[in-house]
Length: 458
Image 1 (cartoon, one colour):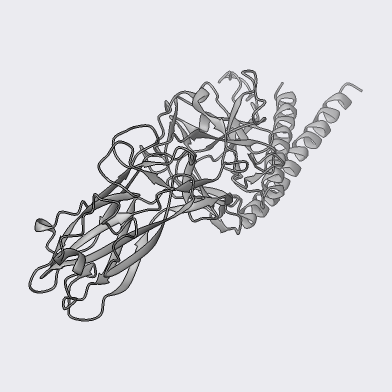
Image 2 (cartoon, rainbow, N blue to C red; image 1 turned 180 degrees about the horizontal axis):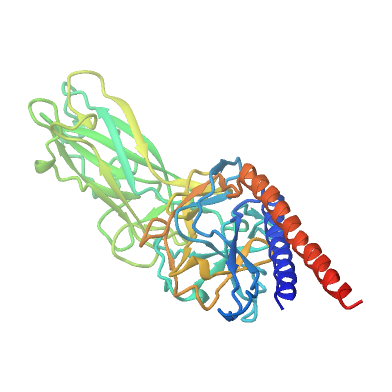
């Protein structure tokens, strides 16, 4: 009967609008929720079978609420280094547990990036989900399979071992006085770099000029590397590079008294270094104890092999060694390498790499945050805490580095705001209220008509 179908349509309208009201309420309540995607209400008309030669049967309406996954929230600045926002496609991969997660603990996907370290240093957002990332190997590269979730690890930003860096490059800027008289040890044929009784490294011969420089070993310890110069003739200087004999031993090589290299430095008539005719090696090698291939660290030190490149300039190069007629003096000396440093802070770059920063200035990549992308993001199923899980309509999962293969970019010290527009939601709230009220009028009107029909029998 048409009146009955009208009552059913009114009830369907009340159900549909009450469902829409619930979605609108969720939107309004989550206006300040990070990464929240607003819900859209879609109403669908229901049509019962109709007999064209008879009366019309009302079908009513149904509603469905679905999140607008593709909408981008605005970026909000944050002072926390591990707060992350995604601009474009992609979701952070999270889990409900950190290092104690098992195969039964599912993976979820979220845009809520307010990650901060928990008591154990694992990055956790305000809903309690732990950020997953790819570990970075010793060469700074990621080798994980982009479709294998098992290659992910919970990102931990505390308890990272500190480190030191050995000196690998030494730059020297100095002048050797061109008018310096040739040493008596040279004119008297006394000087011999390979003889401990007649070289500069042992102290038997006094150099015309000497430069001590502090360098770092593989454990961050300091050692004094000395460059000793002895005038050999016009535009030519004997040079010995050496360390204390307690630090460096010959190790089966021809060098003695802690020497790392010996040779001559030749200069052009214009006072610039003539590297082509100089014999001093520009690479200093110190082997690990027991290698027997040349200068080695003393066995008591337990240090790794080390190679130091000398940068002493040349024609057209600024600085370096020169041979002008002014007093011999050191300009500058620069070395790389650092002493031991402990973890000071972490940072995240635009490629999603989590970098540990140590007190000695060293930096080391420890993880990369991947972004999960799907063939159809609208197929994801919402779960508690602003996360989503895979649904049958989501398509294939692929994890990519930020900015690669259609994935969005990651911004550190930022958060993605909710996509809710309050003005629009209040407008929808009013319309839904009116629609609900109107649907209720259908029922009361139909009830009055049925009452009138019943009274006809009396």
